[in-house]
Length: 400
Picture (cartoon, rainbow, N blue to C red):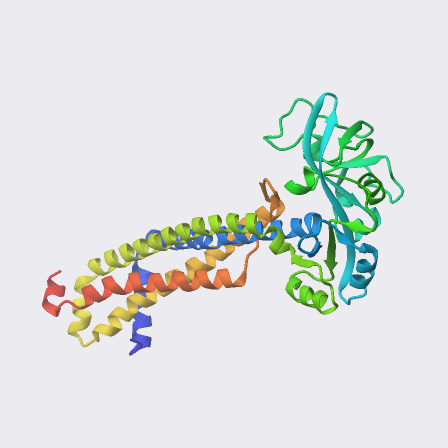
């Protein structure tokens, strides 16, 4: 296929020089747009995954979650467990949480949701909820009559929350009544309202562990312990380390805790991406095939003359393949420049999803895969019409 490559390159260059510049520019632009489409959706999917991962780590679960043993409702001896975990290299923080399903009452309205009991200092070391206060301030270790609420749970006056738990209008300084599952009722002053854009957190509220333990009658117990690691992405490694330290409670990574919802969302996105990729490659095949087919048909007589003077058929075919490679290469470069502009814009003005802003994440593998697939289909689409016309006998080709 690569015999007489220099002759093929010469013929290809002359054909490009003498061809229609408008057609060439349009073909290159179509290839560039196809490349952008091949890269764009995977980058958004990667951005969605990163957003969900960041929210899970920063607000919901940290990196790891220690849960009660099977058959137990609470973890016993939490203080000793914390000290053991925090001695492990690479662990930067732990936060015990007591979780309970409660009913909130406010100005004749009520809704059921989750209430967490935390030690504020520990929570700050494991999550970033305290950094996302929109009103008021976060809890202090000594608070016993204060509560902080998610923006969705607090709600807005007169606005429905779309089926999510909402008290529709709570503001800092208001009093909210909480009915615990054991029948106890407490009234708390709203100290702050936070907004993380994480569904599970923004529909919940927090009081101190001291307060909640007193209401539920717990002693050094917790529903879970969040564990923050120094680096993300090594959760499975840290899980094995925790187990090696003799921790007998259940240990789950944040992926295992949030995997069901995220996996379903990503599977749906991947189906859309597969369809979009297939359609884009089909368009590339059609465009390249038509351009090369028209080119070879218009130059049929020239091809016959080249064969008559002794130019090998494969050299002629190779010249058209080189044209395709040139068009695809320039189109891919233009596509990279265009994609870089799109990504820069979306980084400055990210897409807003229900779970938060999504920034595109461009992976090298996705770019290489897009380039390889674009070149593969283009070469095939260009080779077929060139082979068909170049395969005609000399007299038929010269007659046109």
